[in-house]
Length: 406
Image 1 (cartoon, rainbow, N blue to C red):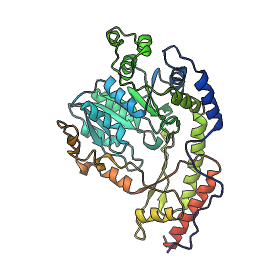
Image 2 (spheres, rainbow, N blue to C red):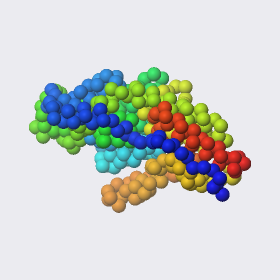
Image 3 (tube, one colour):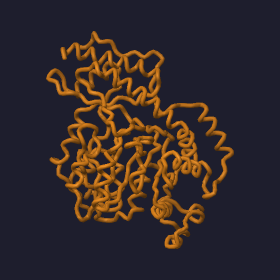
Image 4 (tube, rainbow, N blue to C red):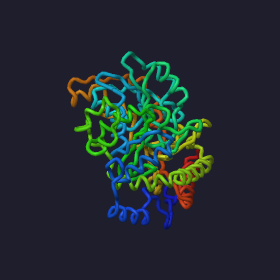
């Protein structure tokens, strides 16, 4: 049916991530043979990463950890979240935002999202607050900041803790204030698919010294505790720590440190190509580009997500299949809304934690399902030359629309 539409051709242009850089490889090799320990007793790459990330993100304290998931786990523990406590989270987020709560025995309360951007719906949050609610965790999904002004008002009104999952969003701003600085903790990722790709790793930021000290005890043990723990009521734990030993690998820290020095450039490059794609999509009658709201600056640019309008001629599943057959890298987002995963299905978690109860009403999560079923994910292009790939994608999209007489 679509044989007359030529597949996409890019010649020597390739999209790949993370960037393979010989200069980084050489710097890493040199560091491996010549590194020194810093003042905290750990390799200096970890100390320098924490120091530089604080400067970049305008935070007082930071802790480089093995992943953003580890950062979230430590944040919950440091804030005193305990068994049977409730934490409101977005229903459309990576499972790691919620799963540490299962390990603690606390309960994630799933909140629906805004249909415009798939971020947590601020108008639904207060409906979910109970006497057991202790915190809200917001995810700046795909690099788009949540409406932090309204969220902070809710947090203040009900005296709740606030955690920001910034895995997708380093450098993103809400009204010129960086994400990760609104809450009690901000959690970032250095996973290989993220902007600051370092193989693996994450970082926890806070402006609260007490929380920072507790986070050190909870995530590590050894020299760092003797050198860093200063609060009298925590010194009794220095000998053993309460350590999950979530510290980052020193080579991952070095890679993240190198990338951090280029973060503004990395964000700018993605923004430029992101805007190019959006401009080109204006020609499409089927697809709508993601919208930048006037109160935020996107950061991280984790994936390019477009919405597909309903059309009698073709459904989204078949449209994606056609694009793929023409060598267009189009897909659904891998992670569905949490309530659609088997782990979060009502009652399922009891098969692992016998005395655990976890329920929600699927009828209250319809926006999450709608967004997931009606959007298409394209790669996070980042080079000027990637515009030629986008041009080919647009050619094919418009050709399919023309064939279908849309």
